[in-house]
Image 1 (cartoon, helix red, strand yellow):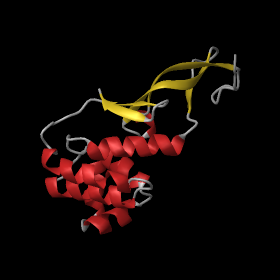
Image 2 (cartoon, rainbow, N blue to C red):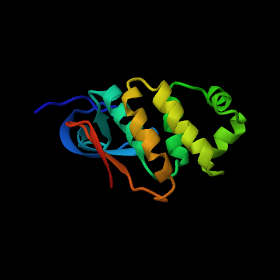
Image 3 (spheres, rainbow, N blue to C red):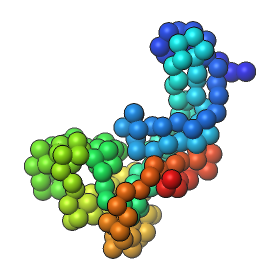
Length: 164
């Protein structure tokens, strides 16, 4: 059985496979079949993410292809995914950086036009997402038809997603 040291207390952990909620890490997704280092001593659980770039790309595609309006966590994740500061992102969208902050903190909803522009920016600037442009553009009329999606569930083995 494979073990690693606990990041919290240093004790040996055991590696299990289970579902892991990445929302606390700022990623709007739950991953199925993830390796997790679980500490028997302090109860800490750390995900072991072998293919982080592929995981982030899969979640980004799931967010931009969703018919649900973007939420604050989605906007923050997508902005960080394309490597932009709030100020740079605001400039691209022709809005004030306080507007981006209000969106990301769910103090203001993202408007319909901004929602669509954010999705297209991410497809255009996100590494390896260009091939999804047609699907996103075809999906634009559907945005807002589903008010809230459940979690995005990512299967790490297949690098596929579904809305739970």
